Image (cartoon, rainbow, N blue to C red):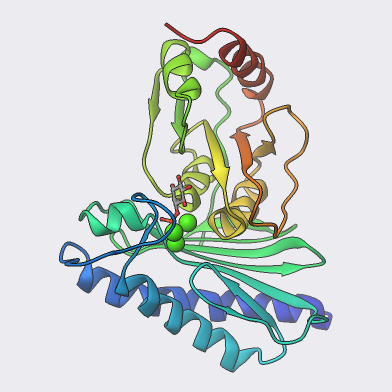
Length: 269
Ligand code: IPD
Ligand code: CA
Ligand code: CA
Ligand code: CA
């Protein structure tokens, strides 16, 4: 194996250990959050647990890969602009759920090379599930390969919606599909698509750290990921731009795009 492959494999091991380690204090603090800090608005919150998880992961990565750059939602430690590898980390995805004692939250760790995610780990502390992927190799849950579903009919499909300010996806697709769920962790939503617990997902407003790991896990499991117009979703590190993401098992994608467009032009009643 060449040294690039070795770096990515080593990164997967380090990311897995760091995510599991960060999961421990999260499990302990879950259900007993007493105070939250409000960031940009009342729904944008952070807790001491986010910072603890952030410290554990960034320290582990920084110690093991001193010349890699790190970009986390809660802290940024850049190590020179010309680093070959960048780690994109969401130490706690689903802080709202976490702060309210809801178990749907996750830890997301991704490695980026040449602007593309090449390795992703999403760990779910409350279920002790570990989703992993390496670009071009595959995606796994707890070491077992995962694939998206092969459902072709929207009326037999289960969809997950992320934040949906206009209610288009939630209300419109509620009528077209078997069900729409709003769970609260974008990283985990992508893993549910990857492992066949959902047939499609819609995220209206994503940051790079929410989706970096989930994107590669979903793609490696066979998912089609586009923007709202159907163009392949382009991963970017820009944080000041809203990024919509439509993901599916592939066979549902044309129908989803068609209905999404209908939903955008004709509000569902
Ligand atoms: C949030 C979650 C949520 C999504 C929000 C994100 P955070 O991340 O992924 O599902 O709808 O847009 O900000 O703040 O809990 O890490
Ligand atoms: Ca946040
Ligand atoms: Ca997040
Ligand atoms: Ca977060």
